[in-house]
Image (cartoon, rainbow, N blue to C red; front, side, top):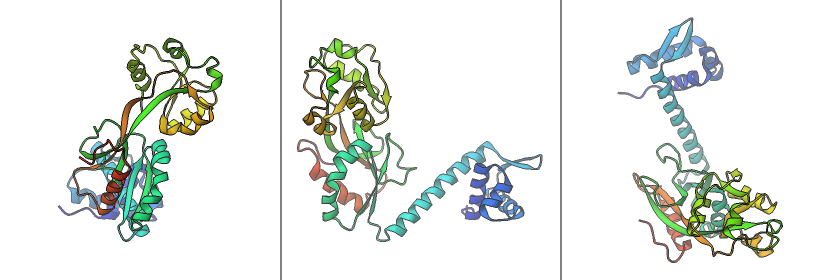
Length: 296
C-alpha cells in the first residue's frame, strides 16, 4: 500500500482535533470543498470508512480517531526531527531525557567537560519524571532511577544514591529524634517514589505504619519545604550537601545514610546507538562510581 498523501493526513488530524471541516479549512487555509476532497481521497485510498456522516457534520469513527492520534504523534515527531536537522545539520545531536534534580545537580555541572572533549555533539535536555516509550518519544537516551528494569533497553549505572531524613533546626530543638517520634512528624513525600519513606523505616527495623504528610512532584520543591520547616524530607546526599554544611538542614535521626536505589543511563536496545550517544555513554562511564559496572 502506498502512503496516504500528507495533506490528507493533516486534514484528518485537524478534523479530529478541531471537530469541524469549517475549522479545518480555516486552520489549513483551504476551502471546505478542498478539505472534503482530501478526506474523501484518504478514505478511498485506505479502503475503510473513516467518517460518520449525518446532520451535515463529519464525525470520525472510533478507529479513525485512533488512527488520527497516531498521525498526530507522527507529524509531531517529523516536526521535531526537522527542527533538530535545521539546528544541527551535522547530525551530532543527542536528545536526552533527564530527571530534573539529578540532571541539574549531577549531570549539568559535568557537561562542560563533555563539550570540551566532543565539541561536535550538541546535548539537548528534556525533563521526564517517569519512564516512557522510546518508540513514541524522539529521545535517544534517558536518566533513570531505581532498578535497571526499564524494558527493552541497555543501561549504564551512574551513581548509587544515599538518603537520610533531614529537617529544619526548628523541628529538632533537642537534636535527632527516635524513630517513633520521627514517624509522628509531617513527612514530605515525592510522587515518583511513593514507597521511599516506608522503605527507609523498614531498613531501620521498624514497620512503617501510617506516614502522613504532603506530596511533591520534585526534590527541589521538597528541599524548599524542608528548609521552611514544613516537615522532614528524605533527601539524597548529593542534593543536600550545602544545606547540611550550612546547618539549615540537620539529620532528623542518628542512622547513617542508606541506599534505596541508583541512577542509570538507559537507551533503546532495538536500534543501533548513534555516534553521539556512544560518545556520551563512554564519557559518562568515566564519571560513574568506581564500583559501578560498564554498560550491559
